[in-house]
Image (cartoon, rainbow, N blue to C red; front, side, top):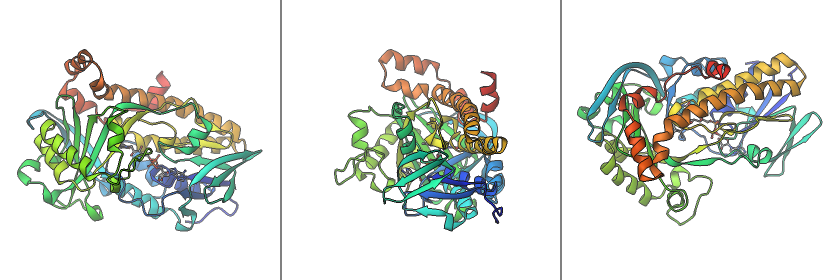
Length: 417
Ligand SMILES: Cc1cc2nc3c(=O)[nH]c(=O)nc-3n(C[C@H](O)[C@H](O)[C@H](O)COP(=O)(O)OP(=O)(O)OC[C@H]3O[C@@H](n4cnc5c(N)ncnc54)[C@H](O)[C@@H]3O)c2cc1C
C-alpha cells in the first residue's frame, strides 16, 4: 500500500498485538505516519486461543487491509448446546456463529502491516508530553516523539497505570483456564457433535465453553481442526492465585505467567480437577490439550480514555470479562471511533480526543456491565454458602447457552442509557 505524499502526522502505537495492529493498519490507511512498538521480540502467533466472530469484527479487519471474510477466517456453526456435569445434552438451539483462532486474526493483520514500521523488543517505560507532542520513552533509552500516542498495551497497560494510577483492576474471583486440543486426539464418537456446535458446560460451581477453531496452518478440514476450551474456575486471590503464577523454578510471575512457564504440577492438577468437576468431553479435551494457559478474570472501568495526546484502546482501555466475547470488536470500535474523531476535528486533537473519550467510555461501560452480569455466577463461587446457593438457583443452562458471546449492539445500548 502507498502512503499519502504528506502524512497527516506521526502516530506511535504502543503494543503490537491484535488491537495495536488493527490501529496501526487503519491509521496508516487513513494517511498517518505510523510505527508500532512491541516489547516482545518473538512472533506472537502462539499466544491466543479461540475467538468468536461477532458483528463488526470482519468489516473492521477488512478496513484495516486484512484480506479476510467470515468464511475464510473461521468455522461456521449452526447451533449451540449445553452439557451438564455428566456430559448429557440438557439444551440445544439453532444459533449460527463463526469461530476463529486468535492466530488467524493476528496473521491477517500482521501480513497487512509493513514490517519496517513494526519495531520489536521496544518496551515503553513512560510517556512524556510537551505542547503538541507525546514522547514515548523506552527502556532502552530511546525517546521518540509523535503527534499522537495510541496505547494498545493490553490489560496491564503501563500507559493506563501512568495516567490513571488510581484505576486498579480488581480480580473477579475466578480464572479462565484455556487450552487447544488437536481434533486427531479427540475420539470421534464423543466429539462429532461438539465439532458442529458451540457448547457450554454448566456443572455446579463451574462454567465451560468449547468450540472448534481452525487447526495448524488455519486448516478447517475435519480431522485437522482444534478444539478450544475455556474453563471458568474459582480461585482465592491471596493464597491460591500466587501458587498458579509460580513456575517450576519457584519464580512468581506477578504480571501473569507465560504459557511456556506454567508449572507442570499446576497443569496436572487442573487436568485432574477437570475430571472431577466438568463434563467428561471437556475434561478429555483439557487432558489432550497442548496449549494450556490461564488468565485471571479482572474488572476495570476507567474514568477516562485520553490524556493530552494519548488515547487508550482495546484491553488497555477497559478490561472486559470474556463472557461477552467483545474484546476484539470493542477494541476495533475504539480504533474506528478514534479515526472518526480525528477526521472530524482535523488538527484539533483536544476536540478529537474528547469526542473519542466520550463515545467509547459509554460503549465500554455498557460492555463491562453486561460482562459482569454474565460472570455473576462464577463471581459468587467464593462467596458464602447462601450466595452460592442463590447463584445456583438462578442459573439456567439454556440462558447461559444463549447469552454467552451473543451478538448485542452495545453502541445502541450505550446511546439508550
Ligand atoms: C478466556 C478469554 C476468552 C476470550 N475470548 C474472546 C472472544 O471470543 N472474542 C473476543 O473478541 N475477545 C476475546 N477475548 C479478549 C481478547 O483476547 C482481548 O480483548 C484482545 O486480544 C485484546 O487485545 P489487545 O491488543 O488490546 O491486548 P493484548 O493482546 O494484551 O496486547 C497487548 C500488547 O502490548 C504489548 N505490551 C504490553 N506492555 C508493553 C510495553 N510497555 N511496551 C510495549 N509493548 C507492550 C504486549 O506484549 C502485547 O503484545 C478473550 C479473553 C479471554 C481471557
